Length: 476
Ligand code: G2I
Image (cartoon, rainbow, N blue to C red; front, side, top):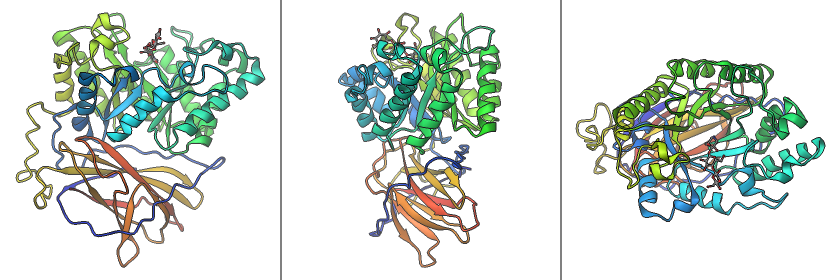
């Protein structure tokens, strides 16, 4: 369950006691993921003037694939930092990049992307752990038992290295065949380990980082077709048997041969109805001008219409760095100029390039303008990330509105009987009842417009598994 609230203001924060401590490591059997839906903000949220800020207005992220070797280019870095609040390393986390030699891990390029993202409070999608492509030949050469060991070790080492830093992992990528067969794709994993390699990968992933959302990601699954039906049946089966899966990624690489399907939204919705989040993970649409713009707009609207569509990622920033540059499939031209597609996306997200129009704190419908902090706002969205017999972990994601903020404060009220046994990434002050904690940043107070951070806490339910109430986000 998710609650979004919004408030603005510049109230003073008192010195607070720190209860920061890492989440309990929760392992194994009985762990149930209840990662929840994202609801629209309940009160006035300034319309964003950037993609990230506009998406944040409905509690979503807007991300891009990033290549480490472009981060030094100022136009690239500026556009990334201004427009996006999530990143996916385009190639740097793939098996060949991080474990080209068995058990020798090289994270340097991926680390540079993750630390850049963290410094800007952007979400990171991890891409990808188990994929038949960009797979070193030493892996393909292994016999079954050894391959299983290598797969689980790879997942464990990579996820451990990035533990706590990844919003969602593409645990398994592109495991199904194209066409009408609905069969699994031949790969070293499929051919030697059988269908079970997918669920084994997800179970291993959950055991390593229980806070990251675990996704299955694929292409040509964007509409209802034989391939998406096969993925759908797998996800349904996983949910029925308690195999951990939190999300499904729809790559959404479109062109005239593979246009945006008319049942795109319906397809996202049927997956969401299985109890998983859905995400648009690698969006690009070949074309130009108004036709391209309309297609982009339709994709964004489809995500916004599906409550559990938690965010969108385009597969690169300027056309020139696209994996299919000649098709000019992205939102920015080679000089980082905004294309018609950019404006269409921003508009579909509810944003406006003229500066938003709703950022005036004196006229915003329902937000408390506070004192002296102008248009600074934030929203706070609660998600239960894990439950177990006797308790649960909650996470609150704070997202800045259309102006950068340097501090935030969120009030969390526990239910009757509930107590917390730990709070992390936040500093707490309790009221005299011991039920209401005001949480302020421990290190993560500065957020760019539209950027997010989160804190988490463990609740001992004492018979009450209701979600705590997250009531006010105050920005300063
Ligand atoms: O193919 C588009 C995407 C389909 N879904 C999974 C994604 O991971 C995939 O991304 C692309 C990257 O955008 C390309 O940049 O994956 C390709 C590889 O399958 C990437 O291309 C590779 C080139 O093939 C290599 O020659 C090159 O060394 O990029 C490498 C790094 O630039």
